[in-house]
Length: 145
Ligand code: DQA
Image 1 (cartoon, rainbow, N blue to C red):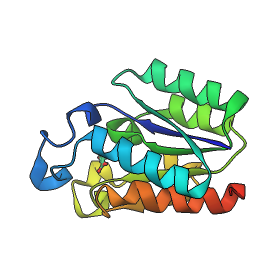
Image 2 (image 1 turned 135 degrees about the vertical axis):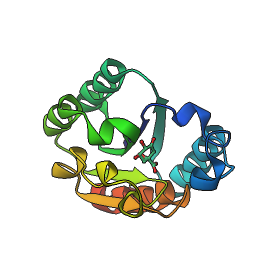
Image 3 (image 1 turned 180 degrees about the horizontal axis):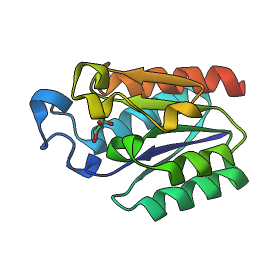
Image 4 (image 1 turned 45 degrees about the horizontal axis):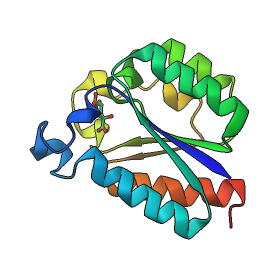
């Protein structure tokens, strides 16, 4: 079974951008950890990042065809994008929302998530480990192995 891991804007700068908030691991490190954990859980990982909303929506549409679940860190689009919410509402499998930082400890504009209206689970404030926790959950929900 295939799981998409989709990352939103500015996450290409992970490790360099505000490391006091997001840590020093890069997105390539996160991808490698997801692939390793995916292989152990019997899940094929497709890992994506874009700064463009339309590209993220395209991957969610593609996931309708070939993915059993979606792990998503929508980054700033979390708080702004009805279009991403609508796309996720057209996807049938489990969706787990991940935030590296604890958004609830930060500015109030980060407290609301459009994506949470669809997500089956939300992980925030667990650092990049949150992706692996999300993978564990998706694997359990899709019955991987
Ligand atoms: C983030 C939190 C968002 O509020 C922010 O815009 C991001 C990253 C996180 O992983 O903590 O870019 O999604």
